Length: 141
Figure (cartoon, helix red, strand yellow):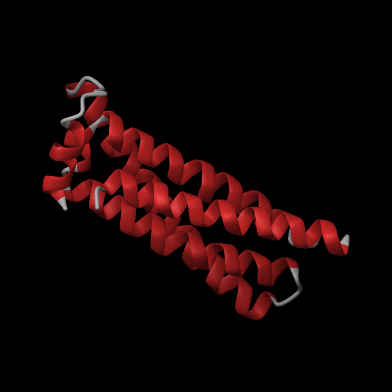
């Protein structure tokens, strides 16, 4: 599976979680987890979709170890950040704060990796919509 498709599939999962959380909050009229809802939709659904689109447009960037490190750090960092945030806003700070901070730290690393990949790619490459983009990207995996 290509890197861009991995990001897209993760985005779809985060989208489903965000919608499910939104529906649950609306059904119960309990909006305590609103910050989690916002973060799962923005960083998960939107962020991961943008990452996937970027790597689809810049397949040579997707074929790097930097891009792979970006994917794994993003995927590993966001879930504990979301769970930790949910615990904190629910009053379970003793468990939530360490989890939130660990997830945030890994997520920040993933953002920095993406910024590096993005600046490198846009300095040296032209975005492509060519059908061969998937072939180039697949070689990295």
